[in-house]
Length: 508
Image (cartoon, rainbow, N blue to C red; front, side, top):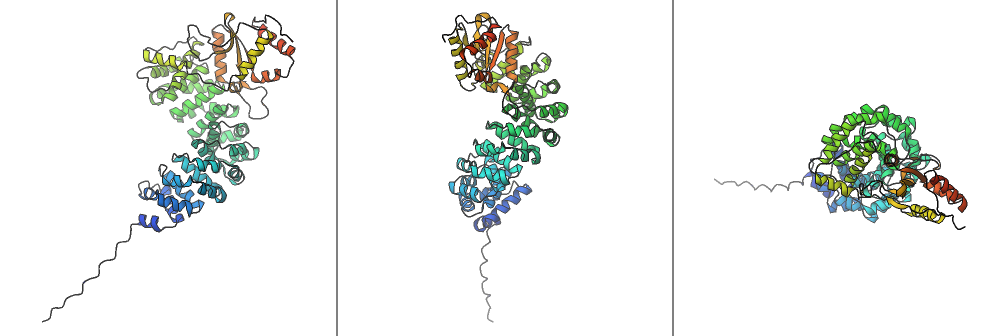
């Protein structure tokens, strides 16, 4: 018998590469982007694909070969999935890709790219420089939806780029009206936040946002964050917003209850900063003093205390203030920054005008408050003050000093210093620059209203026996056009009411 031998079986074919590796090695840029987009939409944060896609090889291929839409979708998905800046973010921060995105990208694609990069924590200076140019600004102003404009502004502010061209176009009636009328509350809030963060002139946009129909939509449909950010931005921009404030006060009970501790603190701070000392709103905040003390950050606690003090509600809500003050000054003091200790010291000083003493028991906290009193925030330069003091001397006024503390024994340090003072007569001359005023959103600045801190300082000076007069930068500018004799009469009348007179006439 012949034994038959079976022919050996051929070796099995090699196993195909797993889908992720196959996709990333052979897939077209748009296919890779589509898969990432789908993962983000479905919320599949545990998928290994995003990490495998964020390599130099894939990123370079997407940036060089893919259309702007592919990179836009891929980056948007990576940001939505919570990824940090990596190879993809580096690839878009190259001049070649940035130029192609600006030239060929649609408004949404541009917005998605910069939003994603900012969300992932990258500065992307080359990308921001290209997107911040006039060409993109005009494209967004012409074709962009409110969401796209808001996302670009938010991203540029987050990355630290001034976005001057786009901010200027948002300051036109056409674009401002479109965003305020068609934008969602969060988009309006994000645009305002960015303009405020970058310190742009946003008065035209504020004028549209503070219209009754827009305010109604913001407070009715907006999230607590959107409401808080809108009000915070108004405070940062130092713009009048009576309709927004009125709506926030009318719904104060619900708005405060729905807000996080930080949002509550931001709203109280903004109202006080703008000089809207709204009793109903602060009463609701006072009811939540325990929640702020228990769950608030050091910044939230300090800012809330400052707001009560500036708005002259320390005595009215003394129990709430003492809850917050005890929390701030008891135990470890290491959590508060130097600026926050300055805010706490300002709170303590302003409280004196209401005959409320806020004490600290621990020496460490007392030392930090004392150091905070030396943390002076400078606004602008001293040219205004120098011009006025030189004129006073020339006209014949003597015996005055600048930067005088209204307190005895060095209390208060550099905080709340009087601009020009005749200390022996307790006469204070405050020179109010632009930063001390809240301006109307429309028309030329003629009669701006003094802000909350300026009112609080004046109240404190008067409570300590000082006689006070103020001269604004607008009045000073008008007087520059007058003759020497007219200016001399102006000062004689202004200061003569307080018992201060020149000792000799000017030589004219």
